[in-house]
Image (cartoon, rainbow, N blue to C red; front, side, top):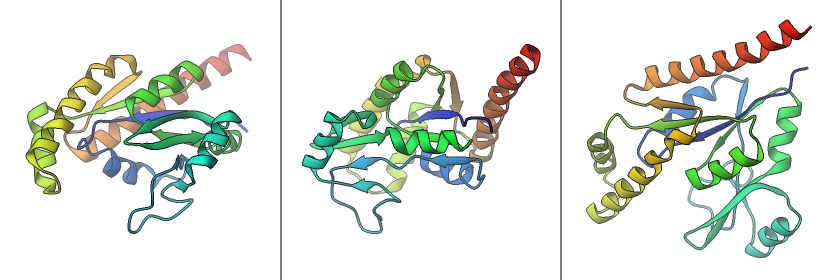
Length: 195
């Protein structure tokens, strides 16, 4: 059985990353890794499905045990990806998607150079701002802070293997499948030639 592919999937807030992933994960060849966090669960979040909710002490013990592929502290909470969560599925031939912010993504790229990295970008910064305002969940100050962070993250997109612009959802999902098909063909072709 062929080993699965590790896929790094990043996007600034408001780019439709969650909506894209919901469509992609309908295909059973893909699985999204579940991260661990020290933050409290939000309403409707379930342990082991949304996140693995653990204490700060447990998280720091896991850091000491080198149990994480990557981890970061954000807003006084730890977030991290268990190595076992990723490697178990890869061994079973399942492609694992890491939905991860840029800082963590760059760490994973260094540790796992064979990972396929995909950055999801908005069509324009103005469109991103419009989408964030349309949510109606944040103040203008928070929106501008998110837009500013998005601009910094977009500057890092050049470090990814692929950039997909999420303008029309169906097109962006189709582009993702095209990228994955190209990656599959690349590895299958080289394996066939070597035989």
